[in-house]
Image (cartoon, rainbow, N blue to C red; front, side, top):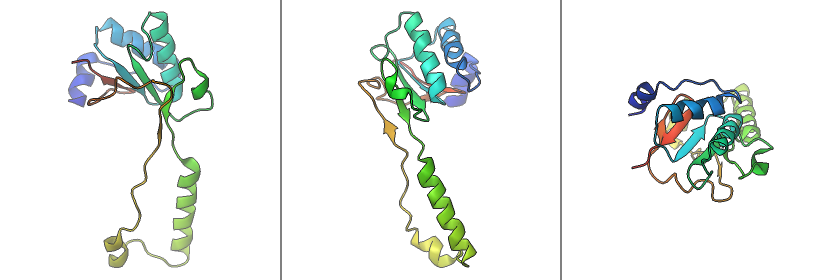
Length: 152
């Protein structure tokens, strides 16, 4: 379904700020029906919000937008940008801990370690701000740098 949607819309954008408005323009030109966008980073999401606003599309009332990175400016946009926060500090701490374990002679690939599976799954927090994401209730369709939630 994802690949088919990408082919149908021929949507390809890079991850820079101007890609947000460009992606929105491409979607609207192709007549895509969508109620939510998830950009691959907050810069693109902010650009997409600006482009939607300039075209009279109300965010989040008509289209919800979510970014990725939770940059410092995200809560200050209007409306505040919801974003996926990557726990970089925790990831670095985990990597360093595992490196020390290995340097001390530990082996993650022993049968005992593989059977224990003591590490709980780690979840990346999605920071929902305001009522930014009320359209994201059903499945999301992936695009190259955007994810689109199609209206039924």
